[in-house]
Each structure stands twice: as structure tokens, then as C-alpha cells.
Length: 78
Image (tube, rainbow, N blue to C red):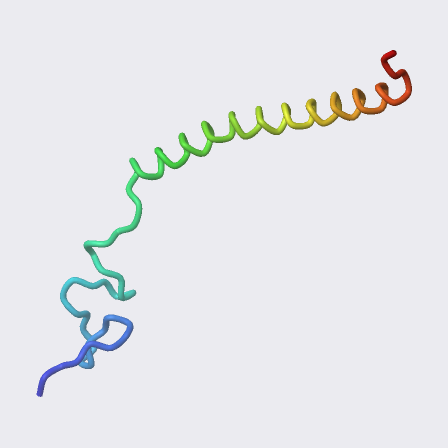
């Protein structure tokens, strides 16, 4: 009788199938490596710099535009 693998990676006889752990994940697929996680952290910090700078510039531009619009109607040019 051939043994079948269940969804959890455990064979019907109670042993684990080749290439899987007791939890059912593949041993070849161990997830992200340390290099990938390090690159993700570095990318995360460096993408924050232009986003924060852009947000500050947008707020300043909004304030300057508002003040320019308000003062131009209050004190029109001749």
C-alpha cells in the first residue's frame, strides 16, 4: 500500500515526507535571507528621506501659496 502525504506534510504512517519538516514547510524554501532583510531595512530608511523631504516641501509650498493668494487680494498691485 502506497503512503500518501497529508496537507501538513505528515505521511499517513506518521512520518514526515522527504523534503518537508514536521510543520509542512519545504526545507529548500526557508524564507528571506539575512541579506534580503538587510537590504529591505536599508531601502526602507533611504526611501523615507525623499518622502519626508517632499512632505516638508509640500507643506511649505501650501503655506506660501496661501499667504501669497491672501495678501494679493488684500494688497493688489496697481
